[in-house]
Image (cartoon, rainbow, N blue to C red; front, side, top):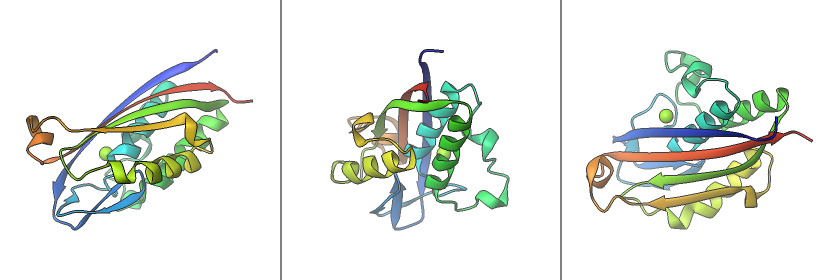
Amino acid sequence: MIVRIGHGYDVHAFGPGDHLVLGGVRIPFRHGFVAHSDGDVLIHALCDALLGAAALGDIGRHFPDSDPRFAGIDSRRLLRHVRELLSERGFALGNADMTLVAQSPRMTPHLEAMTANLAADCRTETDRINIKATTTEKLGFVGREEGVACHAVVLLCPKN
Ligand code: MG
């Protein structure tokens, strides 16, 4: 094994609430996410990319939304669990690159804190984690401010 690539994608719709949680950062907002967990699309996309790279399926297989243990769960706990699964199999994160797709709220002020959270949970350095944010120029469900999407790609390397 040299390196392995993984891709993840997630969407959550806005619903009642007064804040979003993205990358483990609480962002005050006029909506919340409709979700079984905290709805952290950034972490869900990252988990799916990590699991995909290791050929371990997807987040729904490991944390089914029919399981009451995961109701309202802090998605950072899911990410730390995924990191452990990979570590047990001899994988370490090479790097991760993510794109949050949201018309609002503005993500830029929060990217640094999100990056620090993900690096801590993956037990890696912040320069291996990149989070970008874009709008869709008001097109589609994101542009109509119905929710947020996120894409993630990762490389896994052999653990030292
Ligand atoms: Mg999700």
